[in-house]
Length: 325
Image (cartoon, rainbow, N blue to C red; front, side, top):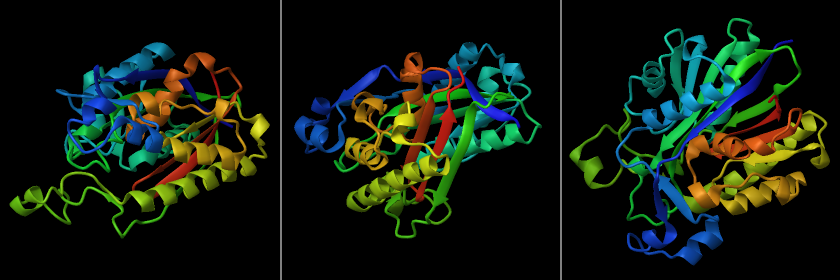
C-alpha cells in the first residue's frame, strides 16, 4: 500500500503585528476581553501583497526543507477563501511564481477546514499511484475581508500561510485515516454575503458592507465546539487510539475555549495540544500547518498526531497522521 507522508514544511507570516491594544483604537473592545474570550493577543497583517505571495514564500521553504525541486512537484493544491481573484486560481499563480513547470494546480474553498480537505485530496492523488510529489498549502489574507468596525469579527482573524510537501512512501507513515463532513449552512451563519453570483457587486452591496465576513458568533461557537470534539474522538475510535497513544493534537486555531473543549472531550492533556492562536489569531486554512511548522523540532518519526478543524460551510474534519520525518 502507498502512503502519503509529509517530507517538508514551510511558512510565511507578515512582519506587521496588530495587537489587542492597537485594536482598542479601531473598535470598542479591550485586551482583557479579547484574551479571556479567544486567547488571542496579536495577529499578523499582510499590508501590500496578496494571498499568492504568502503561499509562494511558504511553498519555497517547504520545498527546500524536503530537498525537492519545484519542477518535481506534480500538483499544487491551495486551500484559501481569500484568493487573489475569482479566477485564475491562486494555486495557478503560485505554480508560476515558484517555477513548478510540471504541476497542475487548483484551489479548494472549505474555509477553516480547507487544509484538511486539501490534504485528503493530495492523499488520494498519491494513493492512486499516478502522482508521487504534491504541494499542499493553506493560506489566507483575512484582513482583506474584515470590517474593522465590527468587533465580533475583526478581533479574531490574521494573515499567514503554511505549506507541506507530500510524497509517496511504502512506509506505514503519513496520512493513515481521516473523516470529513459537511452540513450546508443555509442560514448563512458564517459567510461573505456579496460578491458571488447570488449577490453580485453593486452600489447597494458595497454601501451595506456585504463584502466583509459576517459571523453569527454564538451559533458558530456552539457548532464548532461540538463538531471538532466529536470528530476528533471519532477518528481516534476508528483507529483504536487512546489519549495516551496521541503525541500531539493539532486543532484549528479559532478560539482557545473551543480548543480546550476538544482536548477535554478526547481526554488529551492540554500539554499535548499545539496552541499558537495567541500569536497569530485565526489564519483560517493556515492554522493547522502553521502549528506543524512551529512544532516541527518537537515532532519525532512515528508520533501519532490528530488534526482537527471546523469552518464555514459548515465543514469539519479530523485526520490521523503518523509523523514521517
